[in-house]
Image (cartoon, rainbow, N blue to C red; front, side, top):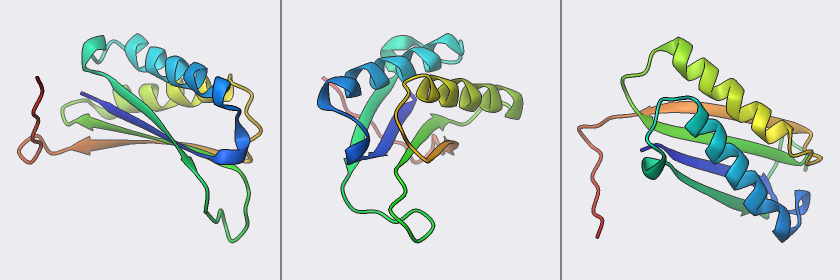
Length: 113
């Protein structure tokens, strides 16, 4: 764990730019020291239809779903680090946001081969 989900306005990036964004955010999460790299799941979702404040302002939003147990200082540092990794990509988004959300381990289920 965690699940790092990056949603973005489709028109912001070429297909070849998306893997670099994924790698950059993944590395920011790894550098936090909070996670084992093999447990980090990072994905990007291009959004075709959206409103940002009632307009079509291009956006990037990263949601970091993590198991509970980290303190506010750790979560704030993680959020800041991921936001910086996103900003460093230079995508022309008008709005960039990051949210760290605790998952309830008692309701989390997993199956893997």
